[in-house]
Image (cartoon, rainbow, N blue to C red; front, side):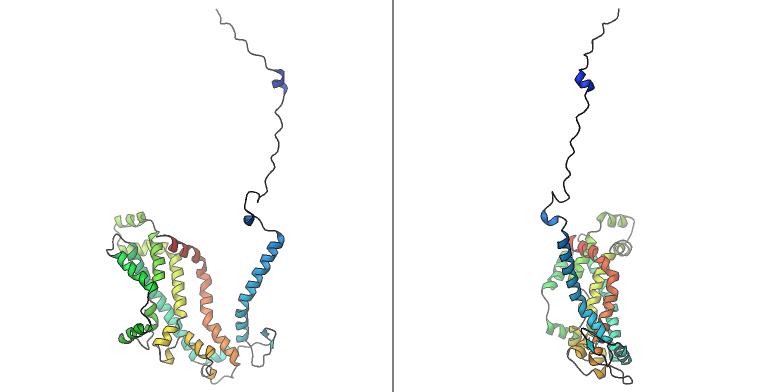
Length: 322
C-alpha cells in the first residue's frame, strides 16, 4: 500500500515568469568626497603655486653655493656680470695647494675627524650597550642619569681649560678629540636603538654560550647599522667643524684645523699671502677666500649622500623606542 502523494502548490504565474528587477547603479563617490578638504587633491592652480614657491626656495638656498663655487674659479681679470664672473680659472686652487697652511690644516682636520669618529663610535657603543642591559649591569640607571645630566649642565670654559692643562693636552691634537669623545644625545639614541632589539634574540645567543662581546659584535652591531651611520655622521661633522676647542687649546698655528684657518683668513681678513705659494701668481683675494670655503665644505658634502638613506630609520627608531 503506497502512501498518498502530497500535492505541491502550483507556482504563481507572476513569480515564474517575472525576472529580477534591474539594479539601480550606485553613483560612485568622488575620491575626495569622504575626506577633509585639506586631504583632497589640490587643483591645478594650487599645484602651480606650490611649484613656484618650492622652486623659489630652492633657488634661494642654492644661490650661495653656486656663487661661492663660481667665485672660487674666477680669474684675475674676471668681471662680475650680474651674479657670476665672466671668466674662470684654477689660479686660486693652485695657489692654495702650492702653500702649506691650508693643506696642512686639511690633513689635521681629516686626522681629527677620522680618529675622533672611530673612538667616539667605539666608546658610545660600549657605554650604550652596557646601559641598555639594565638587569645585568647594576647601577646602570644611576649612570644613565649622570650621563643625561651632562646634556643640561656643563662644567664651563675655565674648568675645561684647567683640566686640559693639568692633563698636559694643550697644543696637542688630543685636546680636539677627547672633549667631544662621547655625546650624551648620541649615546641615548644608540641605547634606545639597542633596547628595541628583541630580548629573545639576545637570550637565545646567551643560551648558546655566546659572551656579551660576541653578542655585541655578531648580533647587535649588524642590526644597528642605520643608527651607527647617523651617529657616526654627527660625530664626524662635529669634529670636522671643531673650531672653539682649537681656539682654546691650540696656540701653535701649525696645529690649526681648517676651520680656524677659515676664520683667520676669510672672516677676519688676515693677509692672504701667507696661505698661498710663493712661486705662483697672486689670484684675487675673494677667489682665494671662496676656494678655502669650498675646500672646507667639500668633504662633508661628499660623505653625506651615502649616509642620508639611514637617517629616517636610525633616528626615528633610536628616538622612539626604549
